[in-house]
Image (cartoon, rainbow, N blue to C red; front, side, top):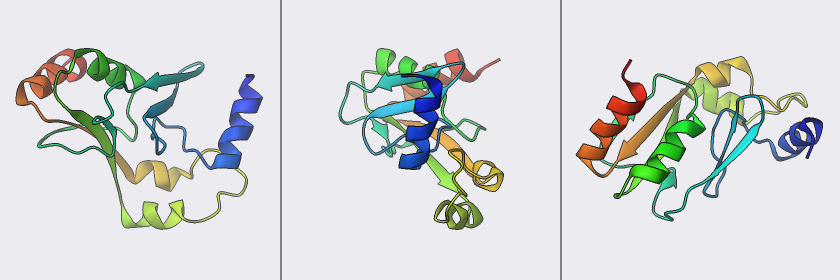
Length: 131
């Protein structure tokens, strides 16, 4: 599928392409091309929250992180987002036929990855987050 077709599909579905996941276990993210990462464990993925939380200091979740968790975690893990009240309000409004969210929605969104296992959370931080 060509890029123009992807952007048209995104506009029609109101998909937020920031690595914000849709309601099924597939993540959409952008680098130079559209990447799809399938989460193989049905108990892991989008909107799965666990005790040990990592603040990504980002507005989205990199597909690299999801691929790493999918390949390396034996316990449950997931990712979720926090949005400011203003970002939630704007998210409910029309985006004037634009397939990307308004800047205030992006800036008002914070991404997190969480883990059932403390050890896997530490390993994730050491390999993926540390400098």
